[in-house]
Amino acid sequence: CIPIDLGIVSDDDGYDAIAQRLNHHLWSNSSEGKEGGGGMDILITTGGISMGEKDIMEQVFVDGMGGKVHFGRMNMKPGKPTTFITIDRDVGNNGQQCRKIIFALPGNPVSASVCSELLVRPCLDLLHYGVDTTNVPEPLSMESYTKHAVDHARVHEEAMVTITADIKLDQGRPEYRRVTLQRVPCVTDNSHSHGNNNHEPQKYVYHAT
Image 1 (cartoon, helix red, strand yellow):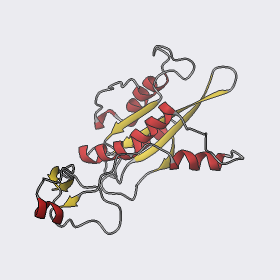
Image 2: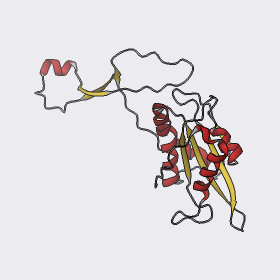
Image 3: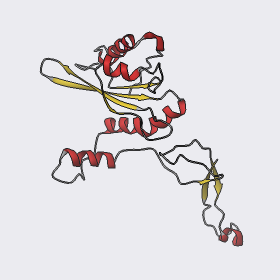
Image 4: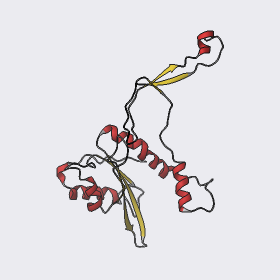
């Protein structure tokens, strides 16, 4: 992947001007090695996607760029406003169609970081590495292919940790919290009675604060 920083746009620019600017970057054929669909393959934005008066990005993508919203208002915390859009356009003279993918992330840095790890990174990995169809059940249908791709998608790493204080979580939706991990020796009855003379490797656990 080659990231391209498109800078910052103002809320006061208006959705027409923002849509024109983004369309240029998405479909321009000036990018090296691009043909037909040109430009960028995936657009990631932050901010302007919630429910405020100046949150106009969904209008930009749908009305100004012809996008289709597949999901938004996610049942998670943080990251609820995250919206996923695709834009299809005919390119060339042979009826070939090109699809662009858009992740509209919240403006809050923590929300954007969480959604990047949970949604954007697995999508980029899937597009980059493709889907290993070696063990896909036969016959290969769109349903079985999609299920296999989702089940074997590369997702964020997980670690089992011990929290050092109670955390009050949202009962209505999955919640992701920031923590600091501390690697500490694992204390067992055996280590108390025999010390470290048993030549067994020291075990560690992680504490989250």
